[in-house]
Amino acid sequence: MKDLHHKAQPWLNLLGRLVLGVVLLLAGYLKAKAPSEAAMAVRAYDVLPTSIANILGYSLPWFEIGVGLLLIIGVSIKKSAIFGGALMLLFIVAISQAWARGLSIDCGCFGNGGAVAPGKAKYLQEILRDAGLTAIAIYLFRYPHGKLALDKSPEASA
Amino acid sequence: MAQQSGKSGGGLRGLVIGMIVFVVASGVAVSIISNKSNSHAKTPSAVSKTDGYGIVFNPTGSPTIDIWEDFQCPVCAKFESINHSYIESLARGKKVKVIYHPLSFIGPESILAANAAGCAAEEGKFLEYHQSVYMNQPAENSGAINATWLQLLGAGAGIKSNKYINCVTKGSYYDWVKNVAADGAKNNINSTPTVKVNGKELDRATQYMDSAAFKKALTSAGA
Image (cartoon, rainbow over all chains, first blue to last red; front, side, top):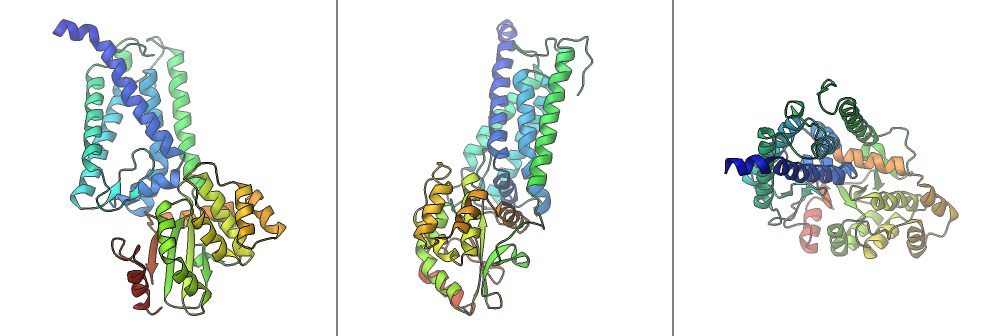
């Protein structure tokens, strides 16, 4: 089993990088092209002061794009995995608090966002998806060495 | 983040990281700057800066009704189909202050439609234009809303002037549209439509899509 994983690990790393990287890149792209909607999505979580929520809404998509690119290309895999995983945990916390407080919002993960009609929110699916992506990030952090990565040696992947 | 060359990747690695950092930094900067309001923006004359750059009817009237909408938002079209004649009668009357805030978060076509709303307001035909967009609302960002469509729509709403056509094609009020959006963001408007009466939001679950409840909410506020 260990041997098998040893062989498969660089490929699993590549798969994980592509999944997490493409999701981040796509999520970032869809939000970056509609910044006022992205800002609205952050405001709708009703956690941050409006002005800070707006700045986060304008800037976060670009960080997602950046980390998505780093993961796909395979540079600084460990750091990118930490950032990606932390981001997913943050989303899980944000969505959970919205759910617990009975807000009715779209997570705005892939654009859109803001308030939705009561009963239209999809909190559980959103949390499960982000939990899966967190697991991928943890795997990438633990096994940063991968196929088709610009960083060839494990040390360089730091 | 910057690793030294000598390890695998070397100069290419630094170049890749540098380029990504540059893309992220410039994206963030452009996004923040382009969503700030611009106090020198050209605005339609019915617009009041102190009323969130909205298009104002009966500036000295009361109570005050603020309506935030996006011309591409389907729920807004539904809201309008239920309540437009009542709201328009208030705007055409002399008593109630009605402020329309055309937001533009759904996409570029929302910006075109909001700009044209400013152009129509300059012709004194905002209400006609506004109603016409919602009655003919195409699917979101389908490419249907363009200068020709807006020109035809304007003609249907009784706007015949070349000034309107110029204003639509040149995007004379794009900066104003941006200001409306920036003000909506500042005021924590997170959904369209959003209706406030004297600064207090109506109840989305019960008062928006029921014309009797909507009317009652306004009359009890003095409308």
